[in-house]
Image 1 (cartoon, one colour):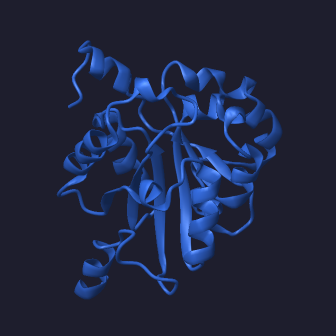
Image 2 (cartoon, rainbow, N blue to C red):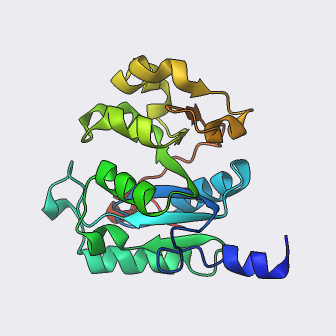
Length: 213
């Protein structure tokens, strides 16, 4: 890759892309309440495994499945994510959902696909989200909008095969040894990543039972 291409790839954030941008970008949404080493490990793995040019940490203004009182103030969570992502090549913490006034993933995906049609998107999420995915707004349509990489996370990995999402879309599973099949354009397509599991949650960090880093 040429030096100027490397520079361009290092600035693939929502402020510096256009409808003509060609790139492969991973999307990791969450409350980041707070950000921690499991978020970074997932991002590092995804960047290498799937040949991503960037990963956006989508700091949600409000998780629809959580009560407002369960989250720290948005400004605090966003700043925490910015700090955790700084100086990491290709990693961008963004407040675009808040700026766009969106809280549902399906609405953000429609916005991204419409406005940046030449970017290859990859949705990144933990096994816990896969297990509870049927509670998300238009969850079946999300599978048809974007390829997905589901990351192993204890104790949820063993529950995936019993989930409604797996039962409906098991035929669209891509082997972790064939990651490029996620980007053929044929959807739905998802894979269960062969990452090393990290037993850590934001709840444990907040409660002080485990360290964020």
